[in-house]
Length: 256
Image (cartoon, rainbow, N blue to C red; front, side):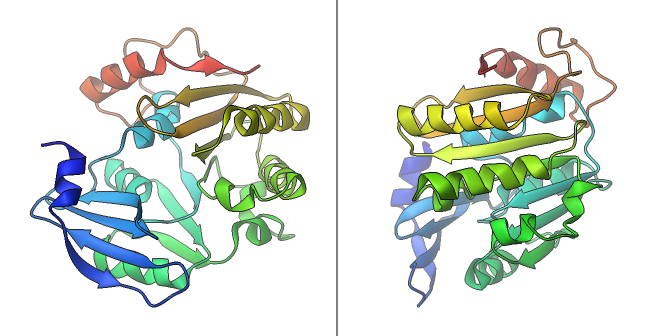
């Protein structure tokens, strides 16, 4: 059954009284989180760590190349990526930065049934990145940004966020940005700013078919993007999964 059919069969299990209306619905197979009736995250009830939306696969493509130790996700939502990474290998330390306490409460109550040890900080992403002692400057090897849409209200706010992300990006680390529902001009603007801010990383991106998301990756220059091996000892992914993702990776586009 297609996911849209599951959504049409859902029953409401939670409704917030906050300004941005948060709802949680579920059916026999899935539970999903929505802001103002726009679905943000979908969890498979039987396998909570299972990825359910296609842009999540694109967002996790760096797993083909390295074994991250510390990952910071800006924007928690329903925690799809955090659950997947925590289940993939217990050595991965995951921290999520989330502004909304209501979203944090929803995650803890409805979207972490296996009680993964995900560290959650209640903070605005840009404020957290601009801290003098922000830990990403020295220890974190993967930044995942899912809050770009909240900073797209003006050119300066976009520049501020992208600058803070680059300031916290080490040469051996990678950065992933989810651009949801933005037109080509906005996407090109983001890519242009990223090219101007740094020269130490490859910039690649994925358009997700039938979805509005564009996933951008900044990957270290020493990663051999055009020579991805059929087998890898530097990936947490199981061999069969690695081969499937390797095939998907071939559909990326370069922005360098």
